[in-house]
Length: 292
Image (cartoon, rainbow, N blue to C red; front, side, top):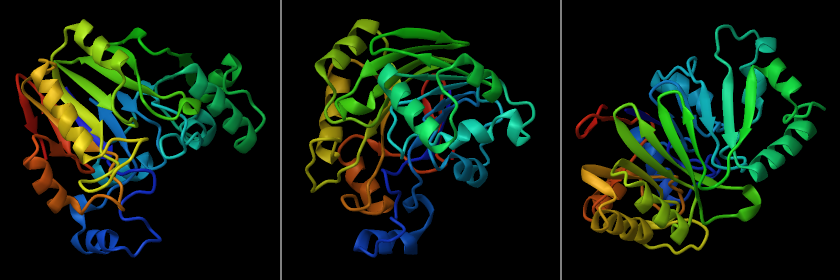
């Protein structure tokens, strides 16, 4: 399983374009891994997690073509994770050739919100109407928490999150192509139902990606902070949910609560997890190796 981090920043990226705080100033000076687009992930070359606003820039910057993406798992409908204009721009009407039909999977709540936004901002068409899907080379598929679907070589289980219920948020367990991945953003501490579901699957995870919106000295009740990621990492290992040699990566990193990448890496190293960065490739074989 090949996993590419297309973006690892929180809602306003890092550095925030309008901000001159010390973290943003230092991140601009350091460049490289300290520059974060908004969070999205690519599995192999055909499964996308979140149709985010920065995926075109990420595709260009990191040489990660999205031309073979057949499925999109949408965590929720917040604007930093879902830019519906991509559904238009990837369609034949915009001159796109060769793109496979996209299966777009999200909770019913997220799909309702997406349909409202689509009708308001991008024309009068009903996103949930199959005729719209035919025009957009798209199939919209609702998926509920604790539901499992098979997408080609992948077995995907949607799991509950602890976040804004109005956004219809889901987390995703992805099994297949030689490995297993749990993608856990946006969320505060994982709900008991999610921990139970992970235990009941019997899957030992190769890669876990966790929300790290708030940093080492920050508190928050709508996302995880560094302390929460540390505690979740410990519990994953203690309960045998993380395969020996498996790794936990922080993502969805905010500028106002986390230091630039080198400092955050140093902190995380002492607490048992890793910090993802834009363009990072993780390859799962018998163990997890960093590609670049």
